[in-house]
Image: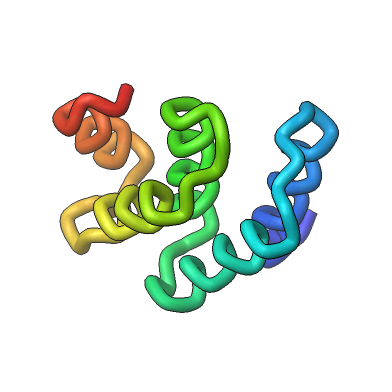
Length: 90
């Protein structure tokens, strides 16, 4: 799998598991990706936490999480998980 397609495959995998994101929600996810210039692993993590906590896609919650994860101090998945624990998301 190409790294540039990981997000698309992840969204497709969510679809097969029953999380039916609308076209507008998918466009917003890619808007968040483009506006923050975050790596795909951070976008997928923000999306996973959003769906887990909110039980559906919440655009403002997703973007807030993505901005938190995309801070300069978070470079690894371990640091991201620590930040999410500190904020009470995990």
